[in-house]
Amino acid sequence: MPGRVENVAHDIADTTLSGLLARPAPGVPVRGLLLAIHGGGSRAAYWHRDSAAEDSLLLLGAALGWTVLAIDRPGYGASAGLARERQGLAAQADTLFALLDAQADLSGDPSEGSGRPPVFVAAHSMGAILALRMAADKRGRDLLGLAVGGVPLRYTADRLAEFAAVPTDGDFVPSTGGAAPDTFFGPPGSYDPALLTRAGRVVAPVPMAEFVDVRESPRTLPGVLARVSAPVHWTVAEFERSHPAGPEILAEVPELLAGAARVETHTQRGVGHNISLHHAARAYHLRILSFAEECLIGQGP
Image (cartoon, rainbow, N blue to C red; front, side, top):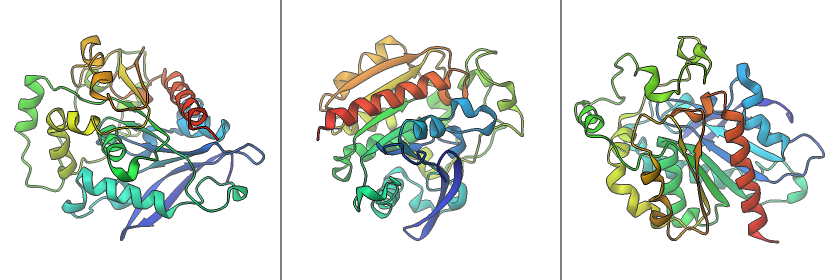
């Protein structure tokens, strides 16, 4: 239904992917499909919470003419417990490409006829690494553009030691009771403290296969980024503490994305790693949508 966020489920590649969907209201010209991909240990609700509807990427996007699908990545939501060989980022990319190919009517505009609508991808952290891999794949060459945030180009020595200590024989990363709030959030007052409560947390177990892939991302990402041709908007958080993300790191991004049609970098003020869970989420989401609109204009007739 237009004007609201719906729970949806898609049967794709012998599994069910759950998610959230918002469509433009009747009469609003449809711009295209915005696929929103959450990070590790999260779910589709990262992009939309009823308690902060004014910040919702889904509602903002739908109001501006985008059909917004926030998907629970393979291994999350309805597909939690997916076989380990299908949890890795390469397998996740295969599943999401199948989702896009099977949902040609997601634009919600019957006048557009059949065929996949223009697809813009907004993605966070582990999900951003997945999105960049999709853009580097030949199947992703027709993506309209990407907006990624929280991408780890580097890890600190302490972080690498933490990763190395994680046993990798299980299906999920063992829970350690949660990281300190300042690892993933900005200073007190920059986010709703209810997000740290059991009822308010937007969390889920991390599939082990994707953790193993992401642990290697500082080594593998340069080769991935070199193959991306779509426009990319790259955001780091002002209070990023889960990995190094200072100006010197941000300065490397255009060089690494030398083949991209356009690269725009941005430091989002007032947020920690989980950018969309802060009071500044609305500003961030509007920036994403502005970039998506510019990509659409740049695509030409």
